[in-house]
Image 1 (spheres, helix red, strand yellow):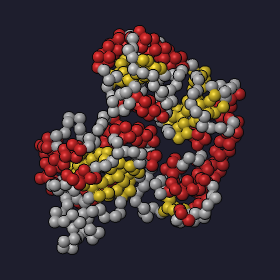
Image 2 (tube, helix red, strand yellow):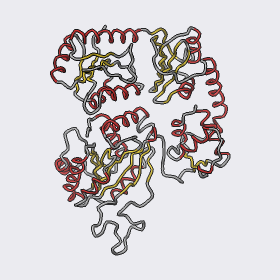
Image 3 (cartoon, one colour):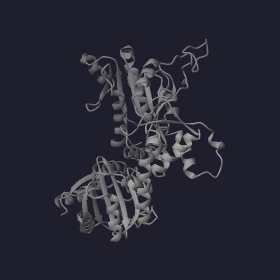
Length: 529
């Protein structure tokens, strides 16, 4: 029953790791060993262990902070923890019937009893499916009514395609609903609209805080009403890919309006695409769409026609909400200056200003990419500078300096593209602008081959100040020149597993993959400072 369970062992003392790990493996468990909280967080997110055993005072990220992050993530919130400490500590959110606490010195027998007990409980809960089937055979509203009538407690899990949702019930009452970071009534009403997929009900104690308060009967009636009204009115709503523009000064809106109006108006600036705005709003989808349509009719919002705005399309195919959540958690854990992770800088280090512009043109393939129309430092609006007017004195820049665009992600997070010139003696500027730095893209072409050593030097200099992932992009035809390709890899000291991206006439998705690689490294690798 307990075999093949995966245990994460996060301990400071290597001797304790060796001792406990050896015995746990002999007992048939799969054991993953780490020595700090950042590495533990990475393993938890990507390997989903069945149990975490951890020192309370882990380095980098302590166990309590690690616990808070894990519990807030819907995909990891059910993982039990065994905390080990030399003294009793009050841990916020500690679940008495799920988690455990051991005082040092820990006897192996005592630890094994705790492990067996928690994993037996986990096995019981996993095996206690009282109900399962397909939504095509029985509607979700009927399932919830049945659970309500029988005063059931547990989790109703629903999977439809790649989407997953959970409804939490206690005594038949709906306590909360969650889909990809969206919760409460908004998530519940979305789930009620699903027509196909699989469901299963797990009977188990629910210890989450109540987030939904109306009675189950009233909730289901209101949810089905909104779904019905949406179907009737959907032809009058703007398309989910439409781009909105605010036509009035927000500060001049009258007081006393409905809260949803203020929320929609405030969201337009950062989420101008209708579908993204609906996702980010806290109110149910039908109410948001109806409010948007009303504000358009009153002239407060305007739908921009194609061609009047830079391409801003869905972020769904780039980073989904859970990936952005993981990214934010990793940034908050690794960098002290990421106080809120509302944005992070990605340095563009190119051998010429023309390459920066070419890169930005290709960036229009990236969902939610927005160009900064203001000329950055080092680039005159006309492209020329009167004598003595250059903003950085006598040294012309190999590329502009400053923000040149941004990628807007879910949850109000932006990846700011910040161009850095490739001239000597720029060390102090690198330091000044490296706050909130999360990654770097090196860009060069055949004309810039002579500057490849300079690129490598800048790369080392910046990484000596802040350890972030780097991606490398050559612009031009090179696929048939293996010798030149290998020389680039050698000059830039690329590892065997590091990719050198090539943007040529066939590279339609190269820019998108470049950023996917960069963000993927931020989530997967241990960039601890």
